Image 1 (cartoon, rainbow, N blue to C red):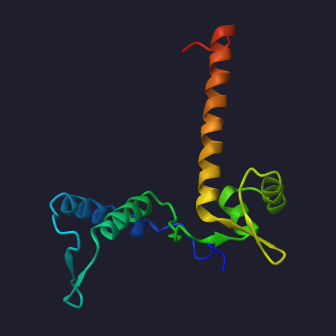
Image 2 (image 1 turned 30 degrees about the horizontal axis):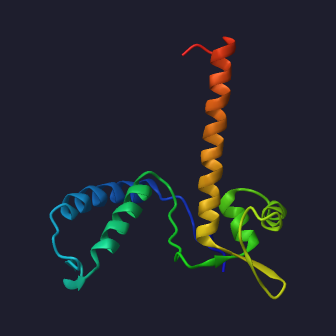
Image 3 (image 1 turned 180 degrees about the vertical axis):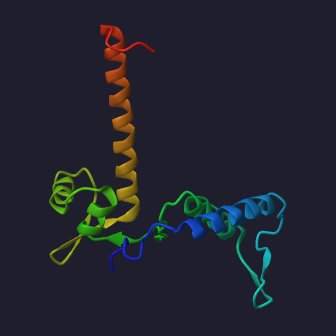
Length: 151
């Protein structure tokens, strides 16, 4: 199963509904004291209890959906293939294999296949983003010192 299957950009209608729902949910979350609040499904009048952390996660999903971003939920302990990791990082599968073999990302082998923990991919992506920001700042500082850039 590919983790990125079924990911599609929300329609304008879905974005609008998500924004309205997000605003209402956030306003309600600030008032909820119960760790497992009860909510009601209007169409069926069914009342269900949902952990407060799940409602907070739903708020995050609605926020990203309202911004037009596709959302995927992956259990933290999930292991992914090199192809799925490549798609998540926006690079080629051979590049992922190179990162694994050089020890930049940890992995395990299941038979002949490499498996990478989802959280290790996310961690690597955060490290790379921080390194990119550091390099951009370094370039800007160098440009300022040489007079190529006025702030």
